[in-house]
Image 1 (tube, rainbow, N blue to C red):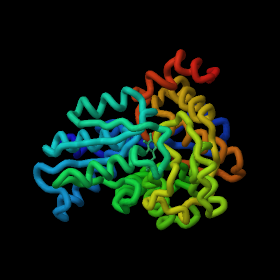
Image 2 (image 1 turned 135 degrees about the vertical axis):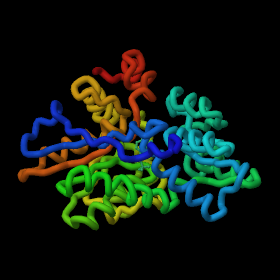
Image 3 (image 1 turned 180 degrees about the vertical axis):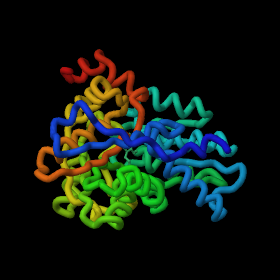
Image 4 (image 1 turned 90 degrees about the vertical axis):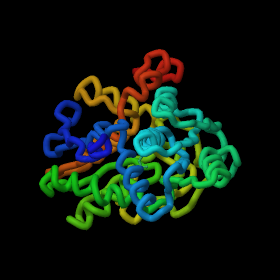
Length: 322
Ligand SMILES: Cc1ncc(COP(=O)(O)O)c(C=O)c1O
């Protein structure tokens, strides 16, 4: 028995104050109850267990990954318990709290420029690949292209939601980066009930929305935004768009304003992507005429953003007027 036994089985909580639509119940799955504080414990644990079983990760090995912080924290925590070395690359927009959390577990971090384009050698994904190729006995989690990532959600998050709602869930909402959450959960829920509707909010500046709508990758739509951990500048292989029924585009303001309301009105202290997900759930609820049960996810903990969206000075400096 160790901390890894506490991964998953996170609480599902009803929103009672910020949902104005009486015929729609909105529930949020609090993924910040996982031991390293995010949804990513599920996938990293599953991928590392599989790599050990198949001899891809051996005693004394090094785990390398590109991460916006949460996957890194999960890798750093599990590496600490299991005696592996961890090297994590991340873009410099990642909050200082997230960077320091990885160091606290003893991991090494390599910070790269957020502005580096996907094909640039100093992009955080390419940097991780280079490091992994240079270090013997290294293993990459490869969360973007590893089908074990959605499989972790198919095997745990999806069944938990089905059980916790007693099969009453009608809609699922999750913004995505690797797409592991939306893909794995949607697959499981649609297998139980093909009518479950799956919605993916996507930040303006990500290529996913246009790809979903037109099938085209438009590099001109790549832009920067402050929400950390969702949206992408490349198409992840872990993401299966055939399971997504609709996408909405959101702004930083949409996400941050709802995150702050969740904290101040519901006592749910999550990160910006939790706000984006609930923003999507509320926008969806507004369109529904029949009773519905929407489930969405709070992927990580608000503590990770105390210097950013929960900081008045940072908000003012970035022209957010909350
Ligand atoms: C804060 C946060 N929210 C949401 C996600 C999206 O999850 P997924 O990669 O399963 O699409 C991530 C992934 O990095 C994240 O860090």
